[in-house]
Length: 532
Image (cartoon, rainbow, N blue to C red; front, side, top):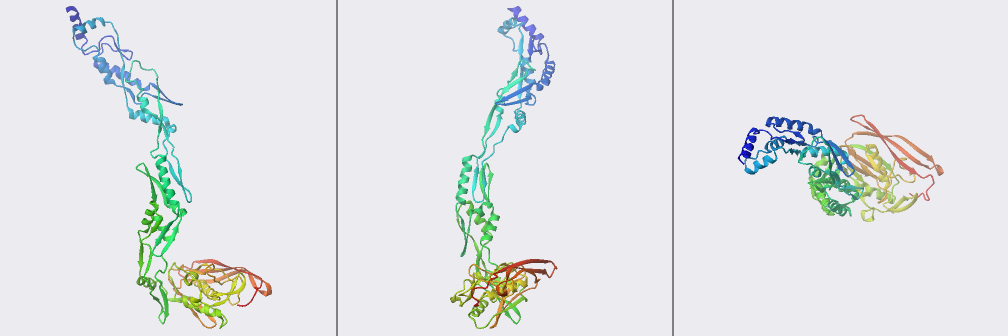
């Protein structure tokens, strides 16, 4: 036993600091190498290992790469430490016996391996390319008046954990291709169809009926086709969120409940010193600056009855603004004649009295039907002849088309816009041919608009046989009739046809000219009666 122990100890001393005999690493004999030599040998093995081919199979997907690209590498330090420790466990009688029995036995050690998981994930992602699909969240698509949900689409990717779990922590041989089988997994959408469906339900409730806007004594309905352009659905903290465009909501309020151009009802009077504004009354108007936010919140919460904040427009402010609007001189006047003493004359005088001093601010409009309303006996109108469908008949307020024609022509030569008008169906000789207008409540209106930067005052006057409408403002444009076409001769020499009258306007300050046209359609048959 003494000789055995002595041999064991002597042999151990001779191999101290070296790899013991009969040791190989990954098939390479390293017995007798010191640590430096061992490091060099393992580094040599490690340098070649990254080129080892790796094939990854995942269903019908085959990826080819290398160990190095996957971050799969030899742990040089751990491999050297294991080899250097082999057979150097210290003395004991049992180990001495084992030493003798294993004196000629070979020790085949593997290389120790580790994996850079970040590099592996990056490489697998690159290899998948467009074969890896990201999940697509469900979405809301808006049509003209409805919201539709598009279901989400899950993504698919290789489960890299199924690769790392198969990569061995050590290898006994190097240079052989590595084959792995990976799993492909479904990537769920961050937002589920169920959650987006709840958003869709809320949108359906929101768009199911009109929103009723109320501001003071005025109201308006806003339907889904106007609401939808204000809506969007965004993702916030991986949840869908309905967003309402507050600025767009404010613009919609302004469109549906616009502040009247002359909310306090300022009128003008004409005295020796020219036009002077006369105060109306304080007016509650829509809306203050928070109206857009209030409406947007109501939309978000599907609250269909919306009370909007109002503000007060004072009579004093109305006068102040009108006094600065440049109503200083006569810019156009027009007169038409009529026989005296007929019932229609009372109506002409009455509508002239009602509209005397009407003020049209810059950008504002004046509608005869809106301002005067239905012509009734209570308002001072009487029955008189009218033309209806080309036939002379009678109606309360008959004859006021003479006022309309006179106002039309004053506006024509003042360069004002005339967005709403209708000529008589039968030409009446006391009016300018093709340049006149009639009225019938509520269907036929005369509306004039003020495109100038100055206010306009309407000032009708009359005699027993004529009516004159003068417009006061600051003269900024020259306007005149420059062409007319379409006239024909009808029964008994009646002037008729589809008439187009061209007006040319020239801005005084710049000399810039533009033109517009006005249409009249006169029948060529004599009316059934000629009683006017």
